[in-house]
Length: 181
Image 1 (cartoon, rainbow, N blue to C red):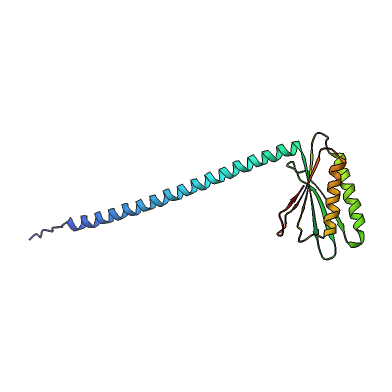
Image 2 (image 1 turned 60 degrees about the vertical axis):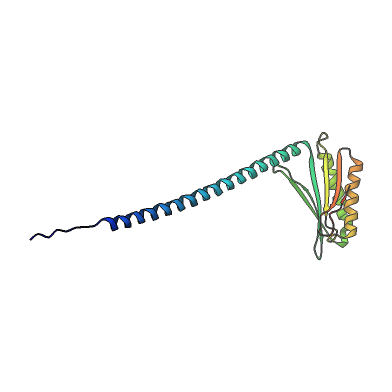
């Protein structure tokens, strides 16, 4: 006697269809997550390109300014035993300049003379067609009044003696933000 085997595929098809739908739903979520990640990456790329374009415009502006004018920054810092005046010229081409004048209470006259000599050298070496801007940046909470007076006097004297030299002093410390011209 032969036995007939009968298979019902209805329940098997139901299971296969359920698995197919789950796979398609999972695939849709993964596609959506990938699209979101792509959109975020594109937004980050756009932001980076904008920053790069801004940086290129800024660099071009600095190069243009550097070709048309010289800018000197004068700063002062103090420690327990000495003070330092820094005369700094930075430019786009990288051939900047820095002169540090270290002094203490015993050699203030040396510092004054060295600063005046440095300023005269810079004024004499500059191109007459290019203006020279000298910025004195200080923190009024960190600078001795005598040092401020000495440097401010030297900077002011420089602009009085030479044409095309412009000066400004600015309190950049936490106690100020005042500008003096």
